[in-house]
Length: 158
Image 1: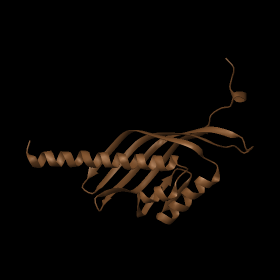
Image 2: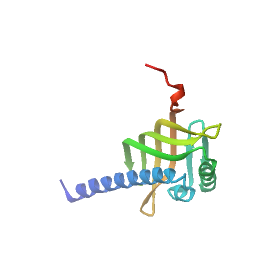
Image 3: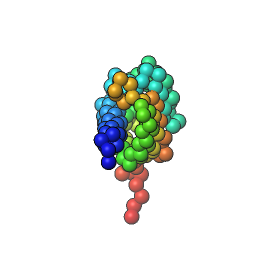
Image 4: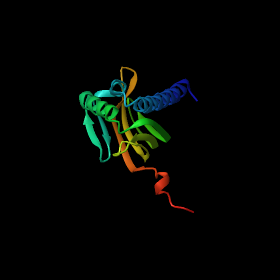
């Protein structure tokens, strides 16, 4: 293997690791009460955030407003995003990624009690490298299932 081939392979591995770290930063920001400043910092200025049947936000201002609303709504508290099985394709300064995800969270039920929920789905993302740094150009959360865990009173016996 030539030095050029080794350098190309190394760059691809470094790019992949940087994209995985970006995804981890996104999940951590969401688990930090949907920290709008941190989430926005992970996107290009005209980036898109989209979640099935929830919202489509384009640009920093829309993403920031949506994340601020999520954080202040009380709908989601103490969340834990888990992403797995990354499929990342890199083409120069652009890349795509797919992850399976599960999110568990506590939230306020209509009767003001705490209820526990889970979301299962798939992320389909697009990335771009700007000034040597990978950023989201598009993040799409495809929600396959979003429901509350049953309470003790609603569980079936035996």
